[in-house]
Length: 450
Image 1: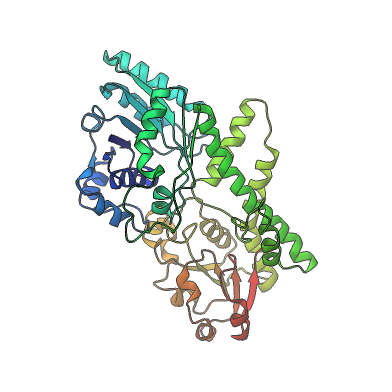
Image 2: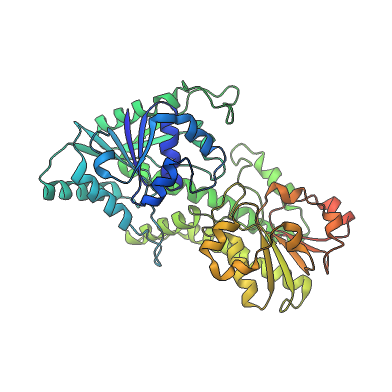
């Protein structure tokens, strides 16, 4: 099938590359000409394991352009994958979605086009997008038939290729049977797993058909918000239990294992620590709460989940104060900037929030990340001077070390040798990533969250 993807950010680029890899003709459209030229040259603007390799394997089935006229008229399916950043009231900013929809209306001309909201958008956005397209068509003197659908993404940064090729489920929502049938055809290679698995991202033994959830437009939109809110809830719940565990002398890791083995609960997203960040959980829980308010409803659980999560960042400061008593003028190393390993994404990264809070209190901060430092220098130019070339350099002469992102290379550091290079062997492992027994034998004062 012929597919167009508007937006070459994290979701859009991954979607276009994966669809081209499984056999479709995909054209990725972005209004940023410099980004398009880089992609044409094989350079991707984000860090995601294996994405560049998969892009090469897609070959000539994958194209990039900045022209709506080139990408849209022949496309049977058009994905809108533009940014929807949060506004101060929690509602997503839909200006990019509006612009894409209006541009679509001027260029749709195939026999029938399915316009798919791939971005996480407020409930009811499908109807709004349809109205914008029709208004734009009317203004341009066109009347090409189309239908709007929702196909939410469930990608984990750092695992986006696996999540796209071997998903837990595919959700499609539309009020048009013809649109649902076209999307089923589009995804059939993934549903039936008929494509050859790439060597760098193999198919797990026994992985067969992928469940397809076919529903109406509003339900598909709400599924995305509900899924992310539930996962965020599990993380905040185990952190709140962790606070109580610390008071009564219980082991939060044993507690997480003990409840996670219950098949009704499951053990995923029960890792106590610094909590979630990134572009999804914070934005989606805020949008869900804001949407509920429009209908006179409260989202007490969701609001509590957000409060608990963001309190973990202040908890880092509290733990450092408990240990050092006075942190003003102290040297503190922060290891990890990205919100999670295997990505350079700094959006709502807990480490950034922690660094700012420490500096506000007069702390001398030195930071390191194996991947995200170049992006950090661009996005936080006023903080670029705090970066060290290596983790070892960041840690030297520190009064405390804060492990904020659980990169594997931090587990492999020679902590015994590093203990000789610090002022005080205080290590706050916010992710429970390091071997506590060996660290204590090396003389480190190991502190955990929550």
